[in-house]
Image (tube, rainbow, N blue to C red; front, side):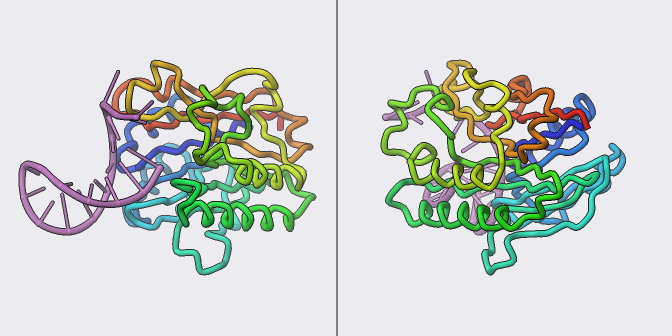
Length: 253
DNA sequence: ATGTCACAGTCCCTGTGA
């Protein structure tokens, strides 16, 4: 089973790239974030022609998350079941594995109310995962807007005092791991630098100025079955790329 | 720190968010 997570930064703008990537890589499951479109604009029919069932939790101009699967898709859930109007998490069961596609709030700045919203959102995700069915494999993928360690930051000195690297944010990821989850790319590559996001400005991609903020958390037993995990940097190149690249996980199941 | 991109509304530019 091959799975991937990709913040596409508008599926409306990115559909040609996403379609080409699906045709080329044919993942079994793709978790998408920032579709930035309503359900009525989501390309359900074109995905079906490509062999994918899909579920979308759209909001409109912002946020929006989806699950695409060619190995079945059932028991879809949207949001945390609270009154949060922002479409940032969708869940579904694919071939017996529980998936979540997550778009964690950006946070904006440490003294911004949105930062508290980010921490509260991560805490809710942690509660959801703490209560999960431990007899089922789980993949929690998405744009976490947190770099788990300084190894995931091209120049930690640039990020002093900024979001994405603060201790409370990193502690929130630690709380997810404490429920028995593993940061798959880091588990398979303990020392390597992989980035998944590069700012559009300043030629950041070509200068190597990136962060690893797109993550695949999987349960420990599933991590044992993993054969590969990497960032597909090629998807950040070429015409009208997203500012994020897909993160892939491969499993012998 | 900021050389970009995408959005909406209104229009072919501006403010906002990332």
